[in-house]
Length: 594
Image (cartoon, rainbow, N blue to C red):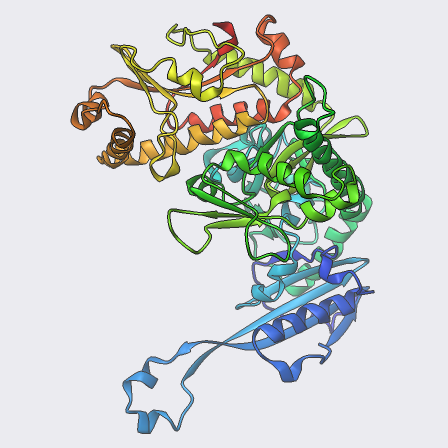
């Protein structure tokens, strides 16, 4: 090893990033050097350094690692003195406050890594592998031995916020990560066996060392450049020669060829068949229904708060469908296509139109959209590929471990048994011809019941039905079917509980007041606002209820869950119970049992 190359004596803590070489911007680029210079030129355009575009950045090779360095000055702000001094004096000088920023790329055997300083992260953000640190640690993990200090995760079922946990006494990774969660960032102790094997070239002394994994891999220990060089080589070696062990039950699919040529093809075929099953005169009496949920892939709460939606086709300024009900978007888009496509049976024509449809969400009379994304990105569903379940969630595809079905059935059954509603106040039989809203209205006017279905202040549903006894207030959310729509009711419960919790515990009654005001606008028999709010100040327990009507009422609970084909419903229920653990008790009830 060339010791002259490693003449620096400085030590620093370093975060290592990885460039996502499968990014579509690189489709026509042949090698790492061209990719790196393409990234730099993109940044030069961003900072309007047009005279430097096309200039190759310097390259130095050491031990089969090609280093490329990019350094630039970034203007942060004008100095205070420029504004203080008279302009006649200030105009003769430059008072810009500059920051030196840099990005160092390391290309090694087909991978590109990077470190940054100053504002250098802006150079590579667009092209990062945003799960690199987590993916790399999957080559190192022993979940039952890794000690977690803190963990941030998002729910696979569209949880509305990232959940963070800090474990002062440590917790194993196996115990810290919930079944339905995907980790975003983890802080954990670096195991002794890793200090003495994979990272033996770093002098750790006898200290407890922590590592942070997320979009980067970060050993929280000061190292010199020679150790960094060896770290690049070791990371690359581990990724090429070892097999990863998935941290999460769900692993994101990164093979874009499989996604495009297999998963997407299956999805579009399922969607066209669903359209024909809904609207074709040749459909059977009880056609197959594709199990989907329809929600914005990232702005979940904002999507729920919207009260006006538009569907627009590619290249058209005018919408072809508008509604105030988000639940109509999926069905009405397919209906429009069935009526207006030249040949609804033609898969290619179907694909061409649907892949160009965008969904816009607005709030009140605002002209600027609050959410927008492609129609297809709003779809959450499960498809079968090679006889195994694959999930499309928040516009990403996920595979699951082989024992997924057994685990999710067991956990779902366990959560229902633990939280089953035993009080018998949902006692009206749901006739098969009744729609969801009509069933809720059956409780209207009954003593101790209030029906708030479709009463949506800020488009947040408080509950469908409220029931009160001497000990508790039950906020009941009702859903027809145990399918992907359970994800929707789970989100409604979580949003409502968070809003109510934040409002009530801050001493405010604004949310409750807005519910009564919205109700009174639509009903001749008014609710007394003060009396209603006072109900929640009498030390009664607040209990949320997820009430659904399954189609398998004659079976035992265990058989209903095992025979249900909707894994989305199962993990949404599990996730909802977990999310509610820090807010209010939640009970589960199958209205098919009435």
